[in-house]
Amino acid sequence: MKLLKIAKREYLQRVKRKSFLIGTILGPVLMGVMIITPALIMSRGGQRQTRLAIADMSGSIYSELNAGLVDTLADGSMMFSLTQLKVGSQNEFEALKSGLNFQVSKDLIDGYLFIPQDIVTEGKAVFYGKRVGDIKSIERVKSELSHCVISKRLSSEGMDYSVVKNLIEKVDLKTIQLQKGEEKESNFDFLYFSSFIFIMMLYMTILMWGIAVERSIIEEKNNRIIEVLLSSVKPFDLLAGKILGVGSVGLTQYAIWGVFGIALSFYGVSMGGSVAKFSAFSPVTIIFFVVYYLLGFLFYSTMFAGIGAICNTDREAQQMQTPVVMALAFTIIIPMMIIQNPDGTFSTVISMIPFFTPIVMFMRINVLMPPMWQIALSIAIMLGSIYIAGQISAKIFRVGILMYGKRPDAREILKWLRRA
Image 1 (cartoon, one colour):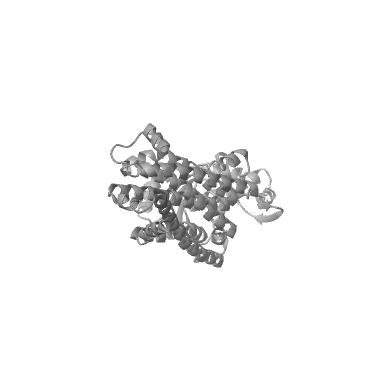
Image 2 (cartoon, helix red, strand yellow; image 1 turned 120 degrees about the vertical axis):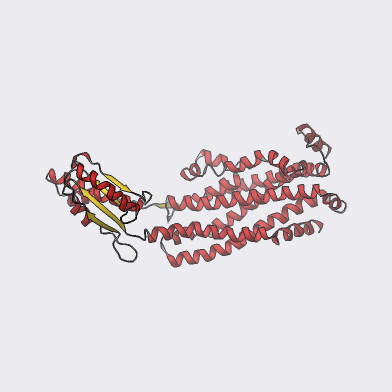
C-alpha cells in the first residue's frame, strides 16, 4: 500500500504542474502542424503569380515556352506571366540589365531569363531573380525550357517531339507490401514518416521521464526529504513507487495524445490524399507502441534511479548518465538501415539488445512485422533486463540514497553492491 501511495504522490505532483500541461498540449499541436502543414502546402502550391521577362536570342524558343507554361494557381489565375524583351544582340541585353535589375529590386517583375542563340546546341541559359528559393517555379520553367530545346533538337533530326515523348514516358511503379500472404499498399514515404514520428516520441518520453525519476531522487536527497520518507517506507517501495508514478504520467500523456491522434485521423480521412494516408495507424501499432514504451521506460528509469542515488547534484548526474543517454540516442540514428532491411541480421541482432530493443523492435514491427517468436523473445529479454537492472539499482539505492558528500567511484559502488 505504501508503494501505491508513493506512486500516487509522484503522479499527482507532476500531472498538476503547468509544465506537464504545456508539454502535453504542445506535443500534439506540433505533431499536427508537422503532419498537416506540409500536405496543405503541397496541395495549395504557390499562391502568387511569377512575372518573367524573356530575352530570347535564338528567336524560336519564347513562343513555345509561353504556350507551355499554362499552369494555374488555386484561384484559377495564371501561374506565369511572360513578357518578351526585344533584343537583337548580347550588347543590347547587357544594356538592358541595369533596368531589369531595378525592376526586380522593386518587385515589378520576379526575374528575367536570358536564352542564348546557341541554346539548342549548348543547352545553357541564365535566370536572374531575387527569390531564387522559389524552387517550384524555377524548376517548372527549367522543365518547360528543356522540353522546348529537346523539341528543336528532335525536329532538326526529322523526329516529332510529341511522338518521342509518348514513347519514353516513365513507368508508374506501384508498391504493394505482402504480409502473411495479404496485400497491403505501401510506400517509402509512409514507412519512414510514421516510423520517425513514433521513434522520436519513444525516445523523448523514455528519456524525459527516466531523467525525471533521477532528478526527483536527487532533489529529495538534497532537501533531506528522503530521510523522512525512509523512516516509514522501505527503500524498494520508495524506488518502485517513484518509477510507477512517473511512468503513469507518461501513459497519461500518451492517452491524451491518443485522443488527439484519433481526432486527427478523422480529420485526415475527411481531407483525403496524403493527410489521410499519414494519419492512419493500425491498432496493432498503437498496442506495441505502448508495450515497448513501458518496457523501455522501466529499463532506463531503473538505471536513472541508480544514478540519482549515487549523485548529489544534477551536474554530477549529467556526467554519469552520458553512456545511458548515448545508448538510447544510438537508436534514432539508424532508422534508415532498419527500414531498408528490417529482417536482416543487423536489425534482428540489435533489436535483441536491451539498450536498443524498445525503439528498434518497434521500428521493425512498424515496417515489416517480424516473426512472433522474435517479438516474444525481445519482450522476455526486456523483462529479464528490467529485473537485473532493478536488482542492481535497488542495491545501489538502498546504500547510496543516504550517502552525501563526494561522489563515489566505481570501486566504492561495487562495495555498496556487496554490502547490500
